Length: 406
Image (cartoon, rainbow, N blue to C red; front, side):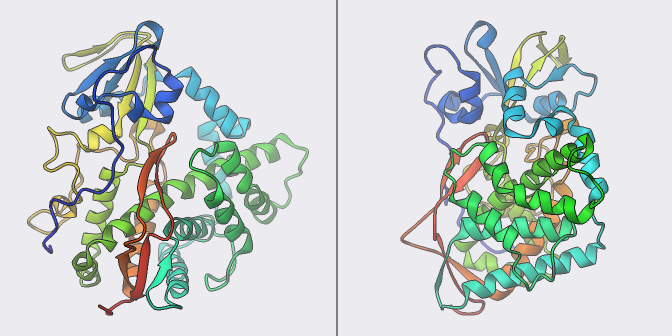
C-alpha cells in the first residue's frame, strides 16, 4: 500500500458542543442530527437528549446498534413520524407494502449476466471520462456526472433497459440533470417527480400488458419510483466522495491502476463509506422491553442510531477523521470489513442493493482512473450537508487530465 497523508481531514458534519436546550424536535433531528446531538457521542457509547415522549436515546456503540437493527421479532418499528414522512415522499402503495414492492420490481427486472453488467458499467464510465478529456485540464462537474453515471448504470445494468452504452439515453440524462438542479433541501416528492418518466417507460417496456386503470399498475409504478431513487441516489453520493478523495492522492490513483484485483479500490470505498455513510442517522421505537448484554431499552423509548458518530468513534478508530484507506488492508493485502461500521444498515431494513452497489462503484472507479488523472480544483471544494441523508455539495471541484499526464 502506498504511503498516505495521515493528517489530512476532509470535511465532516459539525456536532454540538453540549446538550441542546429546550424541547427536542424528532423530525428536525432526523433531518439534521448534527444540530442537536452533542460531540460527546463520538467518545461515549450513547447519549440521551430531550425529555418525556420526545426523549431520544442516541447510540453510537456498533454492537448495540447492530443488535437493535437486526432484531427480527417485532420489538422495534420506525418512529410514526418517519412513517408519515416516507408515505408523503414515496408513492403510498409502495410504502404500505415495502417488501412486496421490492419483490415486484425484482420480478420485472431483466436479468443480465454479471460479465455483461460489468461491461455496460465500464462503457458508461468511459463515455463520461471521454467528455471530461475533450479539453486538457477540464473542469469536472463531479456531482452531476456522478448522478448521471450511477442512474444510467442502474437503468441499464441492473434493470436491463436502454440501448447500447455508447448512446446517450435522453430520459436518464433529463432525470439526472433535474435532480442535480434541485437544492440540497429538496424533498423525496421532488426527486421522485424527476424519475416519473423513467418509471412510466420501464412499465411500458417491461410489462406492456399492464392496464393503467388497475391496482397492479399503480403498485408497479409506485414501486419503480422507490427503486429508481434508492438504486442510484446513495451510490451517486458515494462515487462523488470517493473520486474527490482520490483526487487529493495521485499516488493512490497510480496504485489503483497497478492493482488488477481492485483490493485498493475496495479499501477506498470502505473508507469513503466510513467517513460519509449515505444515511447518517436512523430511528426506532421500542414496542416492548429489549435487553442486550447489560443494556435495556424499555417499551416506548425512542432510539436513534448515529452512523456518522459510530464510524468516527474515538474508541473504535485511530485518527477517525482522517482519510486512510490502508486501515482496511491487512498485512496479507486482503480487504477487511470492520464490525464497527454499518454504512448500509443491517437487519430486515438494511439495503438490499449493497452487493450490486459495491461492484458497480468499484468498476466505475477503475474505469475512470484507467483513462483519467484527477486533481482537486483549487478554486472549489466539497462541503458536507445533511437532509435525511448525507450529501456532498459543490460544483466543478475536480480537474481531469489523461492518465499518465503529470
